Length: 217
Image (cartoon, rainbow, N blue to C red; front, side, top):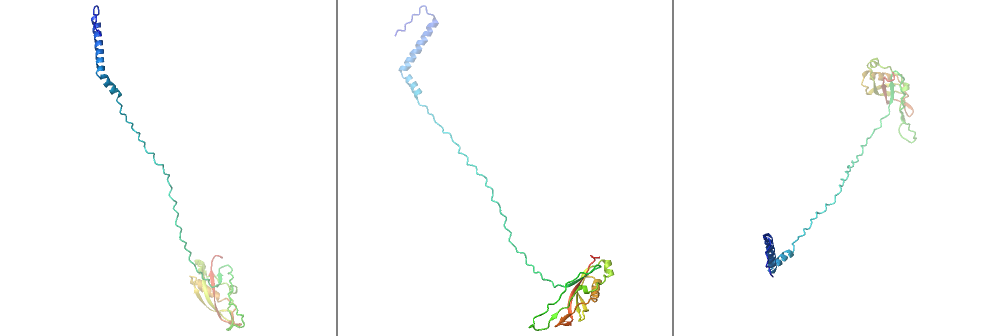
């Protein structure tokens, strides 16, 4: 290779540039000849270490559990308590006389049933017939009218063989002495049908009530 340059008539700057180009090519050729190019190729061909990072997937959220309403609370049944048995004693029916300025109230007749059995032993007794219509209405005590006293007097009395009241006594007071005394006085004016024993008149004890009231005044 002939690198002889004829510098005749060539400017200095061009000459210097040509020299530099020649030197560069000379160095390049030298490097290729001594393995520099092989090292460059190895560097280029060296495999790249690439790591693939797997994306971490979040676990899916658990399914929503629906709110279960609490079971309804059933009220405990009330124990059955039977009502107490009330024994009502049937009162003995008594004759009643209502005493006021109006007419007295008629009363029922209380008689003992007759024994019609011919084979029965013992006497046949029939009680006295007590009827308030057989009694004269006693006057209302003046003091009781003024004080507006009212009440019921329960009397027990003895009816004689002639039907008149022989004796009487107060079994339950009205609460006022004037009314009690007036009831006994009015009872003495009554005349009833006497009781009988085997068809013959006999004395009988019986009961009656006087009701003193101002409602009918």
